[in-house]
Amino acid sequence: MDLKQNDRLVTLEEFIIQSQNRFPGATGELSQLLRDIGLAAKIISREVNKAGITNILGNEGSTNVHGESVKKLDTFADQQLISSLERSSITCMVISEENDGIVRLRSSGGKYIVYLDPLDGSSNIDVNVSIGSIFSIYMREPRFDPAVEEKEALQPGTRQVAAGYVLYGSSTTLSYTTGLGVSLFTLDPSIGEFILTERKVQIPDHGTIYSINEGSYNSWDLGLKKYIKYCQEEDQETGRPYSARYIGSMVADIHRTLIKGGIFIYPHSKRYPDGKLRLMYECNPLSFIIEQAGGMATNGKKRIMDIKPDSIHQRTPIYIGSKENVEMVMDFLFEYAEEEAV
Ligand code: AHM
Ligand code: MG
Image 1 (cartoon, rainbow, N blue to C red):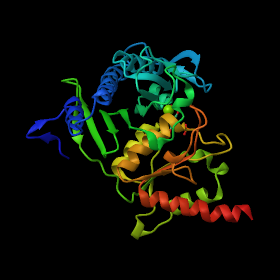
Image 2: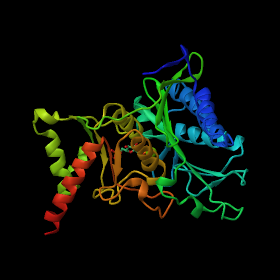
Image 3: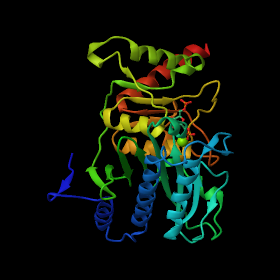
Image 4: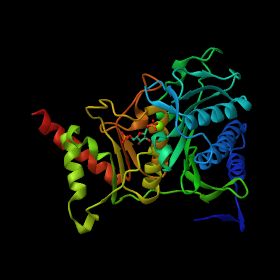
């Protein structure tokens, strides 16, 4: 880990400015946007850490657009991120898990569109388990009229200009990419700064952890059932049986996968025919991160970031992680799809 540069710590702000300086024509707007998200993340981190001692835990009493109960912290995180983005006038539209339609910001001339999952894994808040925030950034296409429309936000993941996540765990970490590798920062609460912990994170090509909610086993496709059995069989050469780890907060499960390797799967099932996780503010940004670190992400048939979105809240199955593990599960899905079809 390259914690220090010239023997001193590098903050998120410095790192963003240094990165921007490598591109002489850069306007600095994307850098500002990333700094705005960094600031909101620090405020959310503070609230998450004191959630147990203030009265912020528990249901707010409403349900979000997907019929799930909204926790107070979800709303808090949503508002912090949106107001932080509003301040610098470079974002025209926000799409967030907590809001049904698009949120038009006052700066309708801003050239960025931001997708947010303000507090992912929120069912884990009450039990003091890691949760996170996810963001995904696109540019507006110049051909559109000044009035911001939802259809402008329906861009495939390959068009993301930046994406990242903040994990509120035993420490708070922030990872982001602008397409030039993944950088990882850790919040030092004593000085209130995110400090660079790794400049170019690489996911191992092969990992020995699989991560899936096995409660839905009976409604999986045959290929997936066979793959999970394969993970559980003994084989010294490939390190099997693999370990099973499932936190139930996608950000936390992906962070572990990024660092240790392995595979995270949320497939389609009887309960979730299109998968549970959202394409635009969960799967695309985390796929961008994993791909930039050398991993892979598919929906079982095609690359996640190549999916052309039909709606801002659409769901997708996802198979994501170390290249060799994802390729292996794809082989199983392909082989047994034929058998199931017969
Ligand atoms: P959320 O955005 O409402 O928190 O839901 C998404 C979460 C993911 O973080 C996690 O991977 C998944 O739901 C867990 O779902 P399940 O409880 O069905 O395993
Ligand atoms: Mg979520």
